[in-house]
Length: 629
Ligand SMILES: [Zn+2]
Image (tube, rainbow, N blue to C red; front, side, top):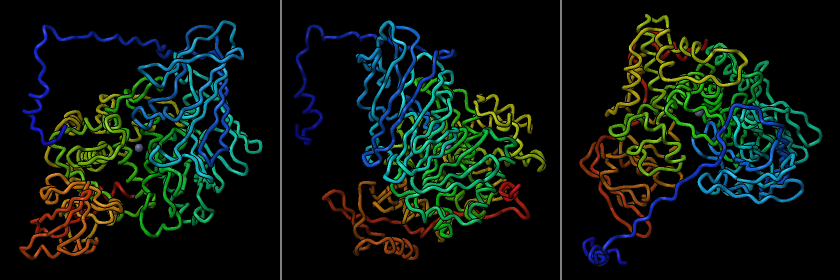
């Protein structure tokens, strides 16, 4: 039908004469026959054999031997709700070639038609074990998903490479894994292992610990001890990228020392930072109890002087060993990977981790205090220019990993995103500032951290908590109406971001015509002037209700000319600068598909970039917070 047909005409054209009675079906009931997880031992140890040598095509060959105690209905599950992803993100679409054998014969399987991560089988009598095989056909182009194998490196995550029996808490399912890597490669993981040639046998462990112990492996590898319990395992595309200077390693050692001092314990026996420096391997930042997966672009060590780059990543992921992995919001803990987790405590799990990530980068010197202040300013400005906060409370953003699964958004400033990270940081800064003020400078968020996170040295299980536990721990540090404050911050809507913590800690947000050093990944950042940012692939964001927005610009547009001349970033910036002292509008020629249009932007506010300036005299709360311990 042609688009020009009016709605009324459409109605007329599709109106059907009234029938005596419309057909009206009843729903088919959904019957869940997948056994619920129980806190009992699985009878026997799963053997998991992985051939990870086909790095050219990115194909993992998986073989599993799963002991069975009885015949009849059984369900095998592919991990679905992955810890740290906060959503149902298992890549089930990449499982192929599934065969299940018992007594040497192939068993038919049926995929559950509601939970497509579940496979039903009927175990024949007399069978003592199942022989399972499949391939995990990993992404070979970024649009298929994260690249986990390159000819020189791999990120091996056991949750993509195994099935587990339904009906048991995953901590009660014993498993032993063995992986064959390409010849001459090294492999690092938080799980102890023994290597014979290129085959590595991992210590027998529980299924949940194996899932929490990914491997980074590759051709070019260097290990740097950071403490008696912590190692930095670095893999890179080329040997040159492994050349860390002693002072760079010293800064990583100070990160460990500062975090352990603040938390008071270590929630692991040994810890491995698995760091990949690669153009080809997909980037990642994923926390585990005894390791973290950290994927950065080349230049991590070699372009150290150019700025902080990705140096917030390791402080963030390391903090998670305490906040998120060991202490976990009750709804974010689940007995298996089929039970959905719920994100309402992510403002602690990610928000306070974000908070400590910036504190530890400054305390360790991984990033200078000056650059950390610039990063804070960028965070504050971004949240303070987000009109979505008028309709969407912070707590609702904790549903975002499920709502949008990190897919790009058109209008972030009117939709919000996973704001519980950065706005969580703001909330915890406010908590810190109140602790300092009310205690006359004797208490701070460090006191909360030691009480809340540092409980049992070496314990890498999980201790769950509720909102009440947070309130009562804060009250034990310093009495205050924490419940009301936190409820307002989490459930309230407001025009402006909660910046009071920075202000009470002696700093405030200002805008000047000097660019912010962090640049927020944009090549041209005019977010707080024209209301748009531009990256390598054109317009990266348009701020809702900004001059650019009100001129009708959207993400699908390309700027082809500025005031009648071909677009360059410099010309656009100059145009904004010149418009400040004139009544002339800024004229942009936009291209969208094969349509062109000119817009005039009546903006005369000049360039505006966010910075923090100190308002307190002497040593302010924020100065104290960022000081090494
Ligand atoms: Zn995180």
